[in-house]
Image (cartoon, rainbow, N blue to C red):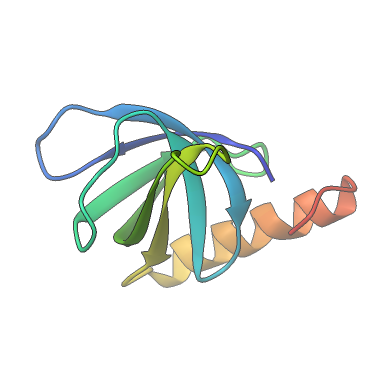
Length: 103
């Protein structure tokens, strides 16, 4: 499921990216500005299934620099989701499945 996202670490500037793959446990984000492995981020998603922007805390697990020709980006694991965040993410994934997208 491709969604436009913004991400930041602490009070740092926000960067833009696009989810290429997203699930209940994490996501791959295609982006130009690459964070460090182990860095804590907050992903902001404007999901079609939610009224408000989803703010998802996560940690960077790996980074691809794009030298393999398959694009650059990074993988994150979602951490410490509240019940409301988990429910909103679940609804987003269910809506994408209904629309014919991949969860």
